[in-house]
View 1 (tube, helix red, strand yellow):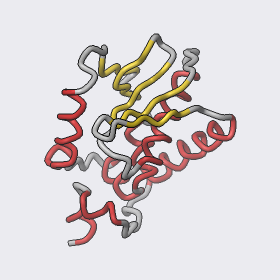
View 2 (tube, one colour):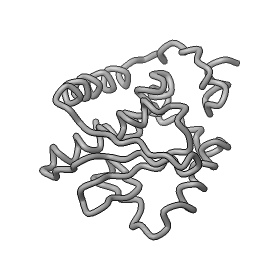
View 3 (spheres, helix red, strand yellow):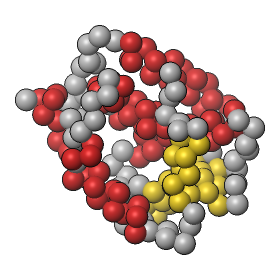
View 4 (tube, one colour):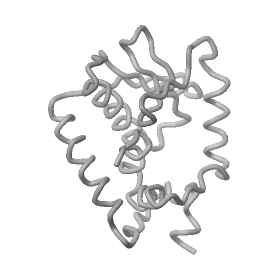
Length: 162
């Protein structure tokens, strides 16, 4: 299984959302929040060479001098997932022999940035996460609901709660 950056992101957001994604149930295209995020991505950092896809596994918003990865996020509401997604990007490129100094998560609406680096402990966690993502994909039944405040804005809300 090719494990994408989006899968790692979903792993840290909600295992059920990840399971839906792994089963090819995708409702994100109709989500207003996703649409706002895409618009933000299209209208910011216009001078950068954007949307760099590597092996159809990771999609980097833009890279500075092949040293610093950048990912554009709308808000910090699910910041931990974004941090781990960035760590996975660095990890993945490292496995391909491309050494990246660090990642930056850019929040243009907040005019803020979050610097992200990859430690040895992070590498071990990512390797475990990759195993767990594969295990979630093998499950016949979706994982339990997480009952979080983020659920109400999720494209899968009706699947989980109605």
